[in-house]
Image (cartoon, protein in one colour):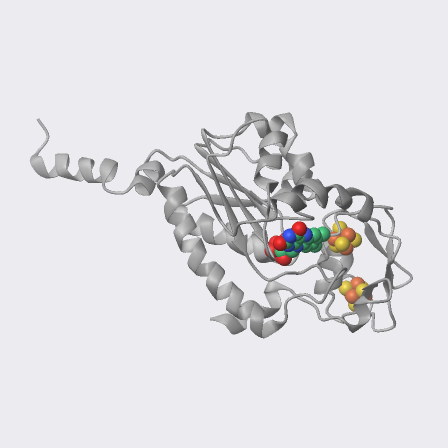
Length: 278
Ligand SMILES: Cc1cc2nc3c(=O)[nH]c(=O)nc-3n(C[C@H](O)[C@H](O)[C@H](O)COP(=O)(O)O)c2cc1C
Ligand code: SF4
Ligand code: SF4
């Protein structure tokens, strides 16, 4: 018969904290994320840190394959595009390897500037299974192609609010709650506007202006491999891309434009705001 103190210790490990219990069983939760301007990456990393999960970039997974894992929970964190799924998410979630790797509890946190409509339902359709948990997380809007993205002071405020929401999200995911919450609305847009994304995501109007310093950063960060540096300037070599805005918003020289309107617009990137937001 083990001494009483041993029994108490074992009981504590197994019942005191669900997350610790899962760690004890060496279960790794997998969070797949996609992010262009850093909002969704930040959200995925906060959730991973607080719940003991591992956050992996979908762009890397598509290159290197799904990391080996024994998964009990699987998460997807990504931005909403046109009140629907980014093409890369739709493609990734439809892959048999991904469907076969899912844990018993599947959740998504979809970041947005306003609302996500029924993007979670679209993810369910691609995965071929129901979500246990979905959260629509309002963060700074980055779609510079269509409008002025969120300016710095507003972005700081939104990010502080998002971090508070993420605390709730981590608790709910940790307890494996079944629910849908966060910013509401956009259902009609999901029905109508989401259909415009695919025809709209053309690269024809992208170019770099004279401010380009030939640093090569845009080529490095494009998730689509749509940019190559040729004669010191970026060249878009694919006719369509994700329209993620990583190149426009994150070019250090603000040299990338899309048509005529973006030259007068601001730029947004989580990476430019985060250090000032502590
Ligand atoms: C192509 C594109 C379409 C977008 N469509 C929507 C939208 O339909 N609704 C919305 O609220 N935000 C929309 N946004 C804003 C992003 O979803 C939001 O800024 C997101 O947090 C960016 O995430 P990231 O920084 O991880 O890339 C769109 C952004 C892009 C680039
Ligand atoms: S990131 Fe900007 S400055 Fe650097 S190569 Fe691309 S366009 Fe030029
Ligand atoms: S070309 Fe620019 S907008 Fe298109 S996928 Fe690459 S980084 Fe994103």
